[in-house]
Image 1: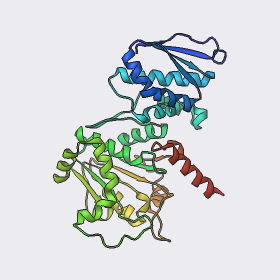
Image 2 (image 1 turned 90 degrees about the horizontal axis):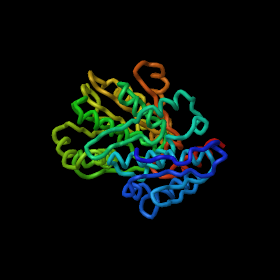
Image 3 (image 1 turned 90 degrees about the vertical axis):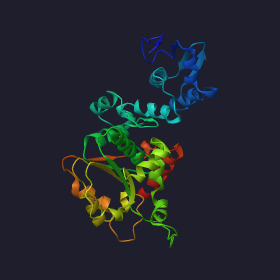
Length: 336
């Protein structure tokens, strides 16, 4: 990797400083970030102090925190050596992925699976990596199973990762097309009549799916694929009567599908296709008294082979630290 730990501790808790040497000063500058902001983020997250001394970084703190900080710095440097940039969420993701089983309440054998080998999703515009253990398991299941559910709060990457996997499978020829769908349900408001063509009427509901696609594919390529029907974005109501063969199909906001709509959608699965259902049970916008099809699907399909259920919590939120705090506050209020 081009770096070495100069002070291997005799006793992890007896030594208060670890020195790391980095042989490429240009990469070290990128590792530290503008105004040392990357180092500051690691310091804040892990409660350590990092001081630069020439081509070395001194990490000071408690034994466990110091070891985790050194590991994150080494992983980030390795990423730079491989010719990749450090993005804002990479540091937070590496810190989360390096947490111990006690930190996350996960059994040891599951943590070994997370540490063994990286999970990367290659798209035309960027390389996407899961940032939490739950996200890593989710991505593995998306590639492994014909039907996968991603259930959890906003900001946990359920839809984003599903679309990334879909783009990867499309550009690598594993499927012939992508179909992205959502129930066209207003979030607690009545918007009334919307002017324009059919596409213009439904586009506001589908915008989050467009945003995800544009992150992974050039805009001109997305437009061309939509014209050729290689990529389709349509409301759930338009799925009835279709058989979706050799397609990667995503149903987003599935908590707003009724039981009958969910059954209809699930039975569209055709030969050589993959299907992903994502939703947040805490944000149901269906009329009062109407049962969410997502809840029914969880109950009915539990234990069916080749179907995975992947659950996320506020600890998996990667959108913004405040989003996790907001979700936890609402969950605490509902528990009272």
